[in-house]
Image (cartoon, rainbow, N blue to C red; front, side, top):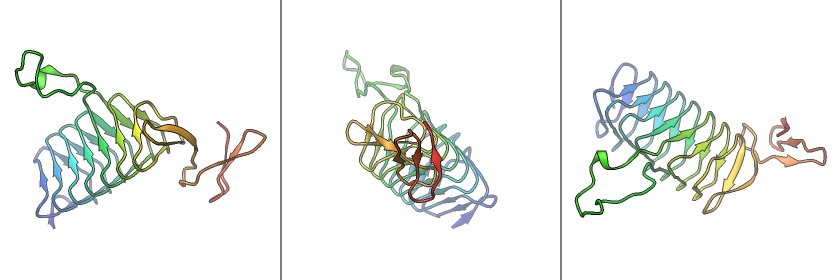
Length: 192
């Protein structure tokens, strides 16, 4: 691994010279980090991760093998991204215009995605453009997220549907008759 101001970059990774990478971060084999990306401190990008240009990633983010993070995505601190997760950015994808000409950068509008503090995106999940995933929310493996996910919400399926709430520790909350919810893993109580 080569060093870049207290950053570990595997020799097979391709990191653009304009990418800002925080101290203590690790970028593993076959990753591609494009121009004007900002990656915070203490992050881990696993094997074969693709980070498109101008993506913003906070501190202490883990992005597992094979994840694809396209232009228009902002990931806050402490987010987990499972292997093979995909963040898309085009609501109306086409290779060509109606006249048959090849589309260019000027022929489409970027759909932004925002992933909130401490959220988790499961393996193989797909997040569509224009979506906001809330703080400590959890997107199940294989889910297809087509609309916003509230703070602490658990969403599953295709399209992703609300299936309860989760604690900051990741445990699924148990609802009581009082309307309060408790985490069976750590005992923290919530009221939504």
